[in-house]
Length: 163
Image 1 (cartoon, rainbow, N blue to C red):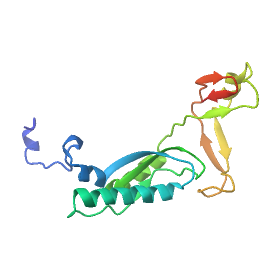
Image 2 (cartoon, one colour):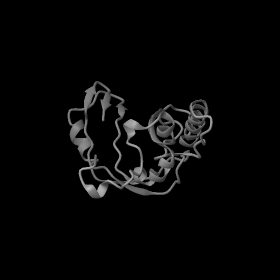
Image 3 (cartoon, helix red, strand yellow):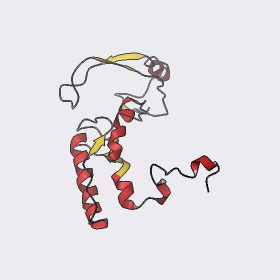
Image 4 (cartoon, rainbow, N blue to C red):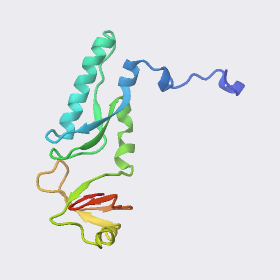
């Protein structure tokens, strides 16, 4: 029962997530996929779309397939990592993900054990930097600026550093 009588006649825009059926979740959702090295982000998105549509046809034969899947950022084919993909009508929110802040975890392998001042050197990279994607890249090769707000050394084990 709504707490405000004025809300009594309002219909919710969407069923609460906990009450949605699996087909409803698949038609408006986010899939966080650990992208393997090899395929492009676009190719992985197509695989997700095809897998979801196959599942939807089994779960809801009368229902419509999803039109598309939008990934929220490009990971080059050689790169592994989390690739958030928006399904069906959720693709409209892709721009929010593209413009949002991102956080990465990486393992850096050095040629020798990390020097004593390694943490201080890493801290110097917290700034605006300029980068140009490599020749073989899924994004346009143009100089762009990026701001590194926080760069922490999480662990050091000999030549390997967790950032």
